[in-house]
Length: 239
Image 1 (tube, rainbow, N blue to C red):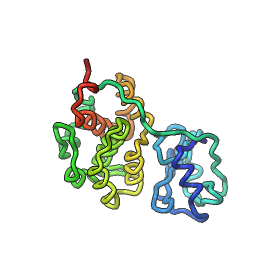
Image 2: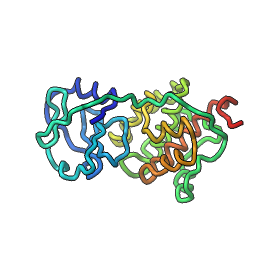
Image 3: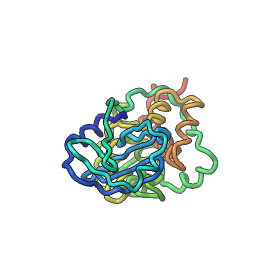
Image 4: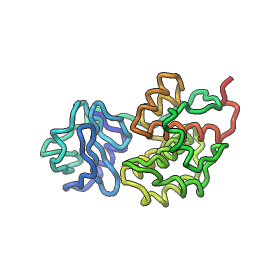
């Protein structure tokens, strides 16, 4: 079992007791850990930076069982979830990206076009109001775009305080899982698929990122591409 650094720290600091289950399926279980969404992900699930990364292929047998924190350890149905190694989910490498469409599938064109996205990629606090919580699901599409933008700017060492503050003020407007992932993005913590695409935007890394969720991968990629464009620096342009 692997755990991102902050997941381990959050568990260590958590008070003992049962935790409300927000979502449970064969691929992931999410609980409310003192106002922060903690996940347990199956081996086949996307390794979100707020989850324990299990090697179990199917979490179905655990779904519906009580989840409790005891002495800094998550227990599901009385079984402790032991952390074997700790990983750093921060994206720290950004390769050369050209000014081009992130290659989202045609089916995503309309949902993304419905969002108010600036052509120059420079998001503002006003854009946050129109994006946060916009769309269905555990991670709305507007939130995914914001997460990709925030994480990429953090990876480039160029966070935007006004956008970051606007997101933090409005986290209550979206789901707890999405709010937690936005909190992770502000700190540069990313999905492995986004980290790989930022480092090297090949056809393989593009396809892998677009395959994340129904719309999440396309939203993250769009936000990341906007963040790179927002700096308008030749260093990040294709030769």
